[in-house]
Image 1 (cartoon, one colour):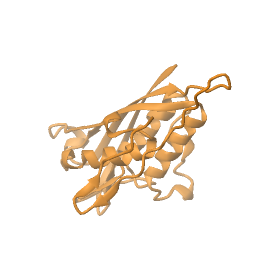
Image 2 (image 1 turned 180 degrees about the vertical axis):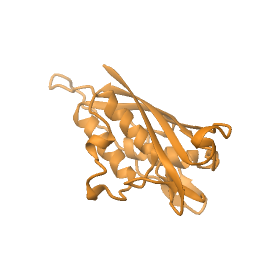
Image 3 (image 1 turned 90 degrees about the horizontal axis):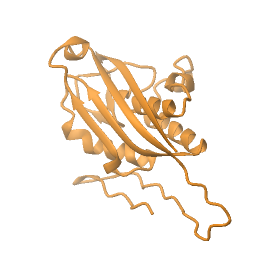
Image 4 (image 1 turned 180 degrees about the horizontal axis):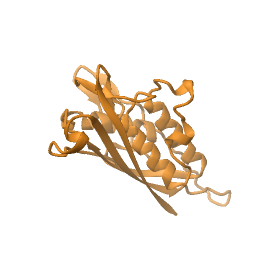
Length: 192
């Protein structure tokens, strides 16, 4: 059985804040405002995963009224959402996402974001699509007042192995990305 989820998130941009997108710190003069680190892309992915299983949204699971989530790294929230869908008997098949922001240009950071996300949710970078677009200077996005992310995910019911089957499958989670002098190592172990 498959389930599809869609998520969207908005954050205001302000001077003097860090800009975290897809688990990566992006150099920019403005950053997103929020209770956590305000990573709009990871929040949209969380909402998509939760929505696919009718589990509510990120605010239900990590309310901004609780101090323990103040300034939290959104990679932790993504990992928690991923663990929740696994406990419900599903696995993530792929992610397709889009960032909407006027600046900065995201293309130089897409692969680093893919590596960061894939390492958390047990996918390869080929299963994590990240696109970006501007609004051609229209609306609050075009005026660089805010950033938006959308995400779609496909979940698949995990295959149950019964005692009658002679073969047992072992799932391996990819190793976290490593940073070398040449940049981010994107080589992830192959899943069997």
